[in-house]
Every structure is written in structure tokens, then in C-alpha cells.
Image (cartoon, rainbow, N blue to C red):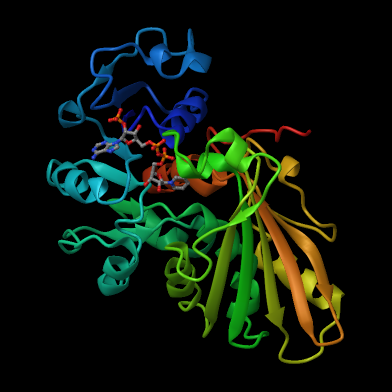
Length: 336
Ligand SMILES: NC(=O)c1ccc[n+]([C@@H]2O[C@H](COP(=O)([O-])OP(=O)(O)OC[C@H]3O[C@@H](n4cnc5c(N)ncnc54)[C@H](OP(=O)(O)O)[C@@H]3O)[C@@H](O)[C@H]2O)c1
């Protein structure tokens, strides 16, 4: 199979290349960039030197593959994706441009006019919840990194109607979530030895989490992200209130049952750590605790560049193409 990556110079593009190098079904890869056209891959991704010896960046409009990953910013994908679909290519878009059913919500949070959804089978690419739709899709909207950790963390509780309507999600992310372009926010002295809350009530991922969880049950989401002095990873803490008293064992059993057939979800009693999943496609869920106000607190961890982006995109490709869902993703996490 031949795949292309548009935005291949970025962090998620680089991570796609790292993972695709071990994918048995990939025969050929095209890498596209506006700024590095004609340059060899190692100029941008020196860690992949020798792995892709002869790969050179082409222009995004030269791409001609069976499936294209658009690892591009929101707004840019809106301009690129429709013509790829018209030319018969399948697309997995890593931006927020095709994640919403309600385009008014998209326009409000992304401040971009949406031209409307293309005539194609579009699926939200969270395999654990929407595998059937992904299988039939021509265009998969790969979920945001925070939504991946948050939705997987809360789905069993919402689906089984066990919690009150309001939930509070508090998430800490590594700096690679902001992409490869340096900025004042990501400048080392501004991040190091500090933790910074940002977009405390109006982050773009809040309505995405809410729209998708509401497919399972009624829930209102309050979400606050924090930037932490780490490179990769998202730790998500959810505060929920149980409708009735439940034993922790019952909740743990429910989670184990809900995810029993999922290769990339691991449920356990301990509080999960970022280093348990770093570099891998796992989402670990654990640390369940209940206080005397019936607050159930629980945690998930993912690597934002793998299960939160490129690993999940490859999982989606595997489902769309009928490959083994784990192909290319048998990665052992890097701890410490
Ligand atoms: N970083 C994460 O953890 C993460 C997680 C989930 C989802 N995402 C989403 O995935 C997408 C890529 O993220 P990233 O972190 O890889 O970003 P990035 O490091 O900034 O890379 C994006 C790449 O897109 C290309 N690009 C920028 N503007 C473009 C345009 N107008 N047209 C065509 N190409 C353009 C650039 O490459 P050239 O200049 O070489 O063309 C750039 O290297 C974003 O939508 C992001 O929100 C990121």
C-alpha cells in the first residue's frame, strides 16, 4: 500500500514516519512539505536517517497515494482534504476540521468559517467507540489528544448512566502538543519548573469531548488543560459524582468488561503514570477512588503523539483497510 503524509515536517508527521517504518503493509511513502520540497527527509527528521534513505519531500499538490494523512493545522486541512477525496484517495485528517457534526460549534471555537462537510463517509476516529463507522469511512477525523484521553476515561460511566450530568476534567499535557514551531509559551524558561493552566474554560477540545460523550449519554463537560514541563504525554483527571453508592470493585469490573476486547486500553487499580505509556499506543486507565461525597475520581494517561495522534491514525488506517488493528503499533513503552 502507498501512503502519503502532508505536513510531514511536523511532530505528528515525524511520529507517523517513525511508526510506519515498522508497518508490514506499507510499500511506499510520500512525504509532502511546502517549505522543504526537494530536500531529503533527514534534514528535518535526523533520527530517521538511514531508515528512509531515499525519501525526499514533495509538494503537497503532487501527492498521489491510496491513503493520505493530513498532519496539518486546522483551517489548512479544510483547503487540502476535499480535493484529495475528489481524486479518490482515502484521508485521515489529524486536525480539528472534520471532528464536529455541529459546524456552528466548530466555527465558534476554531474561529474559522467551515465550508461544509464533503460528500463522503466521515467517521470520528476513536476506534474503541466508533469502529464500525471507521471501517466504512473515506475520511476519518482523527480525535484531538485531550479528547482521546478524556472520552476513553469517561465512556463506560456515561454509557452506563452511573454519574451525574456534570463532569470536571483536569488535564496536564507535554509541550509537544503545541507542535514543532517554537513560541514564547513553549520557550524553555517559560515552561521549565512550572505548570501553566491555559484556556481554562474555553479550550477547543471541550466541545469535542462533549459532542462525542453525548452520543453515549447525557453529560456536561467542564475542562481545564495545563501545560507541564514534559515533552510527551497527557495525564487526565476526571472528577465525577456517582448517582448512587457503588463499590470500587464494581466500577473496576465495569471498566474491564467495557474494554475487554481492546488491545490498547489497559485498566488497573493503581494511579497510571505517563512513563507507563510513553512512546506507545496505550491508553491506561486507573486510580479509581471515591470520597464521602460520592465523588469518583479517576485518571488516564496517553502519549499525545501516539494514541493522541499518529498511533491512533495508524490504528484507524488499519481498520479502514482491513489490516490487523495492531499492525505497526506493537510498541513497548519507554519507562523511565
Ligand atoms: N502535537 C500533538 O500532540 C497533536 C495531537 C493531536 C492532534 N494534533 C493535530 O495534528 C495536526 C498537526 O500537528 P503537529 O503537532 O504535527 O503540528 P506541527 O508540528 O506544527 O506540523 C504541522 C505541519 O503542517 C504543515 N503546514 C502548516 N501550515 C500548512 C498549510 N497552510 N498548508 C499545508 N501544510 C501546512 C507544516 O509543514 P510545512 O511548512 O513543511 O509544509 C508543519 O510542519 C494539527 O492540526 C494538530 O492540532 C497534534
